[in-house]
Length: 104
Image (cartoon, rainbow, N blue to C red; front, side, top):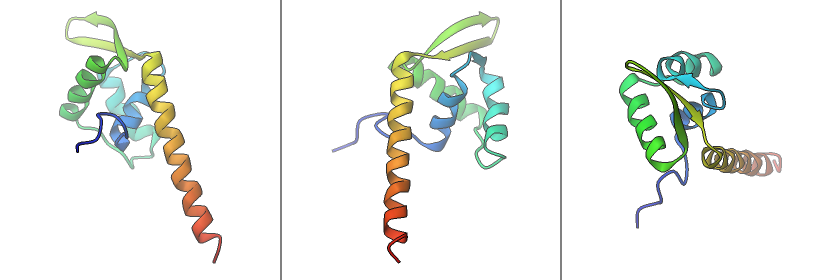
């Protein structure tokens, strides 16, 4: 049985949504993700715009401005909820790691 969409997020998804706490354009996201991760995570433009479309369809983000081909986006309350669930999941994983390796 396939898992529900957005039940867990990839690193790229997580950081794109994190960028959208504040309104920004797609091109801004391409710059912000590597900057906030010290270059550890990059997002290609094809991946970015595909994910933005999926996030829009799922109601996780909303379009705030259209200026020609430039579009800006912002996280919705539902998107914040999904991002928080992923954060909680990641925290639980790190706690599991600590509990196993601190036993040694």
